[in-house]
Length: 118
Image (cartoon, rainbow, N blue to C red; front, side):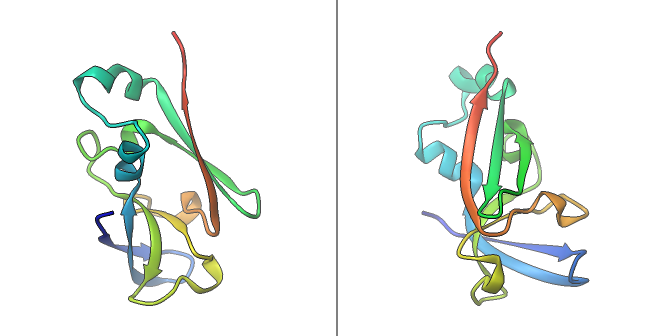
């Protein structure tokens, strides 16, 4: 899948970091949730739950991860600053617009998409 690099400031480490990985929107499109006119309403009624192996979980609206709707990037990272993620595991969810990394998920183990019915 196409790789993307985002530069963010990690408030926990007080450092600027460059994460490389796959855009979460690309992963969703690959799994059948491609955003377009037919799925626009469904996207507006959907959210994602991302969970780490430590059972820490966060919530994103589907519009927050879709480039056609939101300026920021949400990335499933596999590398930081050109190297491994280290203690953060093999996968880490990173959001470029968050001022604090409280919705970043280390040791990412699951992403669940939920659509709320009307």
